[in-house]
Length: 216
Image (cartoon, rainbow, N blue to C red; front, side, top):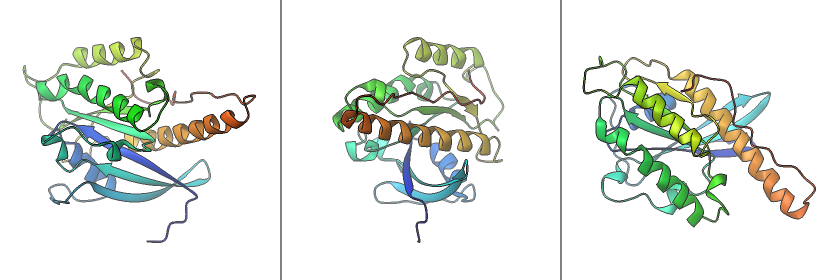
């Protein structure tokens, strides 16, 4: 494949096994729902997108079931520019484990050389399987909103952008994809400026992740 983009960014998909993230990953990649692949390590695809008149390349990484056996290794998180954090809106455990995934994201980024967890890449929260009707056992909107607020209160991220999606009927796939792409580019540019500022301390660094979208 010929790469035309000068900037090549990395986006990672994390969340519990069977949370629906691979189905969302396949939707991003343009694969049909229900097609199953069994890669040996991680599943990847590459896409080039025009963002504000700039051609940007995106490498999307999925865990491909590795999270069933152990925590993901540093290589998966290394140089990530944005994270897609997924949970099944009908599965209590996958919702409760969101905090675990945030902790792992920060710890692996620190292991990979980031000076502070505050410099960890931004994330977008996706609730999957919205085509299935909610029941009393499903995660309520109130609980999801409270989780988002707790994350914001901890200043882990300025604003949690949350989307409910369905890979089965392709519902609400395009908007989060666009937000994720812009978040990744903003983070990439900010980290470039940060590295430049170490050589030139007069440069000002700004965190520009406040893109308008659906949010908690």
